[in-house]
Length: 313
Ligand SMILES: [Zn+2]
Ligand SMILES: [Zn+2]
Image 1: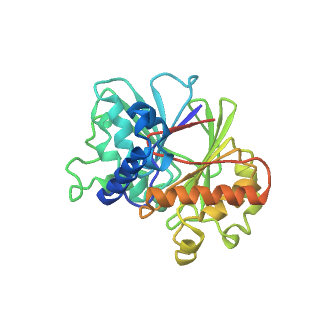
Image 2: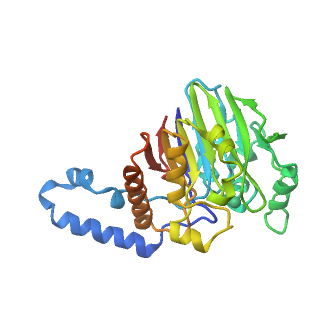
Image 3: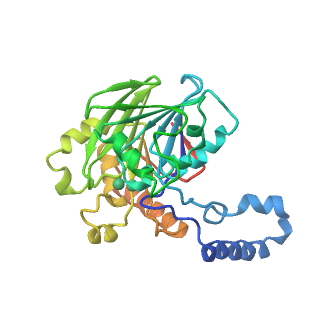
């Protein structure tokens, strides 16, 4: 099974800035100067991660794929700006069914939908799954004529909205999926997906603090423990979190503690702050791994959701 990340930023799309791009070029050229004898192809292989990658700036859109899943069906969690990139893979194709699970309706989780090309093809189907009772209203509001030229109702694909129940399992494409309420302004839901002998927890836009989970500590542990992978909101450094208390997101330090407590196998940090540069994100990953090693608890692998890549579970 593969978890593909088409967008991993939180809050707002945040493209790589020219000044940061130029800084990367400068560092690569300096490195090349020290390795001229290698030739371009060999040199490309030794460029360190921080210079050979960018984290990407699109907002939340995750796609889960397994070879055993029904053909021409696609399982997507959240429709942030990354959904546009995913949709471009289907240009010129007909007859696909897209199943989009929505955690909530903040812009960064729905703003890709009006630019999702497959929804303009009447030969496709797009199903939306959400525990919110106002799903249709919220999607219509995003495409009010003051904001966008095409209304939601006029989008040509066959569309359907499926209302989920909090904490109740529903079946989809061979998965049993359970929505779990999180602390977040206006509410948000995590989703636990169990199927194909794997357990994946998608926990974006949730604020976990000692106080916020004290009553629900055992419940959350029962929900998420032993996940093969947990995709978790890791928006802030610890210090930032103190300044943004009650904003609905979690610090990387807390995420590491929870992942260890829940005996997660692969923690995938997600929902990056739009103001964190690639360099800061690399530093955050390094610090998270040091924290994990220091605590010497059960084995845990720590990753970040880099746009345009996937993690295998
Ligand atoms: Zn968000
Ligand atoms: Zn949110």
